[in-house]
Image (cartoon, rainbow over all chains, first blue to last red; front, top):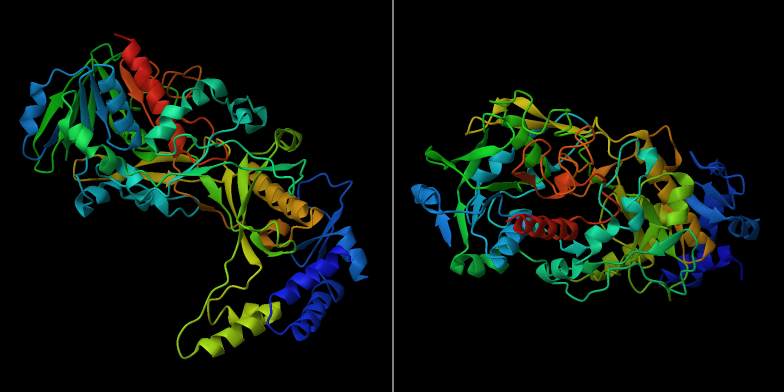
Length: 70
Length: 485
């Protein structure tokens, strides 16, 4: 299971509604990260030549997160 | 013994004191007790009463003319026990790197070493009731980070100094505490190189001059500077202010709401995690120290007839974060697995961040203060770098995912910087008067028998809560004074 999957699981764990919330969470994650995201590719004032992370709508995600989403 | 200066004000002249200590907060009480334990007779003066009063507290009123600052008056307490009366009790210690010359700050650092401050810390820990507690950073196999370590700290009960030491002082034959005794002037000898006496006034308008071989001003970082600046009858710029350093480099610990997070590894999050940067990280980026704290929310429980409805609203809201945002505008609730990211971040010493005198005066004719609290670009760099890198580390270790506040990721937005009511740095310690107000023994440059105690002497603030170090430095000063005779 990829890191984003565990991220989604964390969202779904927060509900009593189980599968319904899981689906909703997946949808929300998709909206957050997959549709019209605000991507910040360079952290301010930091040498990020070897940057392994991306900031999407304020969420700090690893490349594995993004890869799993794609 | 304890006396009310409003009534027994003439009695202060009867004592033959070895030292006069102004301010009965953690620093002043600690110095008085330590000197007494070394056989010295101490006059301890407290401007406020035994309990809180508006009359005393409003003497702290002042203006904030820089970045918005809420704690000019409310961040300190003016009565017996001082600000320990509302202290939260969190104790931690400076890191060794805090005592290195960090040239990127553009100001000299501490003229004393880490070892000089940390040595004998056990006694300070006993005073604040955390004896034997380990304050060092700790390793956690589940948090294998090269950039950050988990900060160590201990929680004092918290110690209320007046409550704890009232009986000891009351029965002491070596400490005379006078409360309602307001320091209103410092008189120097004709040579201006020694203090001749202190002018002390009660709330009934009666005043007299007290004298002792040595004097310690321990009124808090804002008030220490205010007193030196107001004592300007013989030296127009104020005592110890020959090079203009009194009041400068006022520092806080920056309190920035960095963002929120959701847990991805529930086994790790049994309690909050407080992260501090490693030495290598600080050296690489030339930034200040600090603590970024990840605090998981506990799951709230609803009660009453609306319990089912509230529970439904929470579960629905928590499952749909965007709905949660909307609902949080209507009702206040947390979701299990959510958490907030908060911070305590070192502010660099900045001469433009300063306490000066305003034109209006208090009941005793002393000019009130105005504070120009100033957060510079280096501080903003420290905030953003610590926020982003700790968030990255949480993702890398798959412990949590962090959503940063917009002002962290967007440099065009002003950072929401609050404070922790930690006043520091207005009479900084230095090797020479060109860089500060007091020397390594907390003696005011150029005035042989005048000493300053408290966090106003801190040249830098580190990434730690200051009270324990204030107490430790007070012990160090008392030992030094006792060694002079």
